[in-house]
Image 1 (cartoon, rainbow, N blue to C red):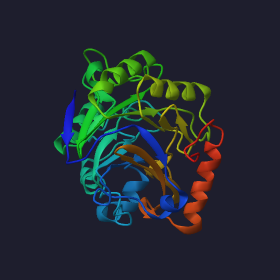
Image 2: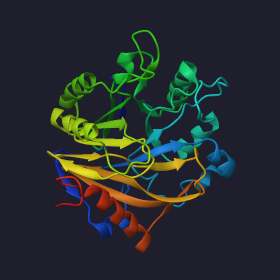
Image 3: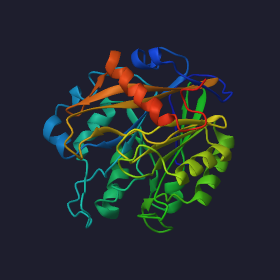
Length: 335
């Protein structure tokens, strides 16, 4: 195991799933102190570069000021869509991004204590960028999944102990093994089913809940491909409780399957990679206790700052998500 993060007290899991109701989803996100459950917020793609630097600069306090519930959770997990590095030799790619280390203060201020780093931009500044990322995250005690100094390290779970609950996290990218770590070099955890199922089965007896992250799918597509639904469901069958996806940059539906939940794409969160100053999305808030309560929380990103949504704007996000979820045999909106 890479690391065990202990936070504080809690209780026993039965593994039931309870979808939230729209009125709660729009207006009442939970915090660590408002419930005995473990509160985990999951977000989509984050790029703290480019337009983010231009419009936020050093005004770090403003980014999460509109959503105090976000940094009052037990765990916040984002998809970190670039390395953290000062290395100035990018790979030969059309788009490359990197986060300046000064924004580590932003992650700390937002209580971001876990990142998925297995994605198509973490290698934008090569192995140096990946190794710098691990060093910087380690320096501020932020955990990461999906990268490592060896293949074995990249596949290792991160385990959090919170309120007497034990949650295990895994992360993967690239069915063709792009930028994969090896026995002797740093890189990513590849999306090989044999690896994934083995890792889930190894983790399952050690934790109350297993959460798997995938950076997958086609950009701008609103519905997952067949291979994604097959893989997501196979992960649940192998012992995962929750599968969380990102990469398409748009929201996709959320499925209930065989006692688990698959959120195929959480879209963009704080995404400075393109100029889109205002857009609506969700934070997937999950409470882990005797039941796993899954609640999409509508939010607005306004000039790369997070704001609460309510009323008609929040309901519009939920209605859209309901449409995208309607193609599944059982969605998160079905009792």
